[in-house]
Amino acid sequence: MSTTASTKPRAPLTARALSKRFGARVALRELSFELAPGERVGIVGPNGAGKTTLLSILAGVLAPDHGDLIGSGRRAGWVPQQPSLYSKLSVAENLRLFARLERLAEPDAAVERMLEQTGLRDRANDEVGRLSGGNRQRVNIAIGLLAEPPVLLLDEPTAALDPSQRERLWEFISSLGDDGTTVVFSTHDVSEVERHAHRVMLLAEGELLFSGTPGELERAVADGSAPGAGRSADLESALLRFLKLHGH
Ligand SMILES: Nc1ncnc2c1ncn2[C@@H]1O[C@H](COP(=O)(O)OP(=O)(O)OP(=O)(O)O)[C@@H](O)[C@H]1O
Ligand SMILES: [Mg+2]
Image (cartoon, rainbow, N blue to C red):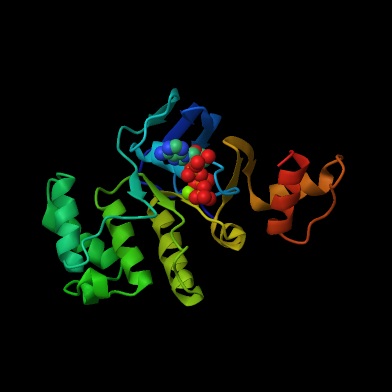
């Protein structure tokens, strides 16, 4: 898969030693990584690992306690798990509202562009509350993309979708990388990472345990010398073994 063709800045986001705690609970421990243009990164890890906390910090909606985020100066697009759509407004009205809230220079042009890009033109005048889960998720993503951000962050984007809607959404998300947009998503469905991410980042108890391709993770487990190491049949069992090898 190509990660190069890009009209957007290189290395759109670099994180250096990001840390966050909530009271006595450490949510993130000194996370460092770099995102490449057009790259799709899947964040996985057990409940409470820090995935949402990390995405919120990258999105700029939560401040880290320590560490730096070095970006292109443009904010990342954010698709939270519980988005704030107005169900009584139409698709186009929601997009227009968010385009104005974001103070885009040309809100109407941005709405038109997003209707086109997300394939929602036929639904432009439908009430959001009456859309299928998959189409509602497209509206959420359209809102995240309104300002043409270099990086799009999605927190468990397919969690509420049935298998065919998931598949359609992934086709759409995968097409975003074509213009150099970097996509970072979290999921509990490891097969989505295997099929749709160039890189997997494994978090556990706020620590970045692994960052690399799914194949590299499987090899790391297969080559491990600690008890429990050995060839894994798939990425999911490799992840579980990796967590076990690291005391989780
Ligand atoms: N606003 C908050 N106040 C207090 N603790 C929080 C807050 N947000 C997150 N935490 C804690 O920080 C840790 C990381 O939470 P986070 O939601 O980032 O995990 P996650 O990996 O997204 O989990 P899940 O898979 O369940 O979505 C957890 O221990 C959680 O309880
Ligand atoms: Mg979460």
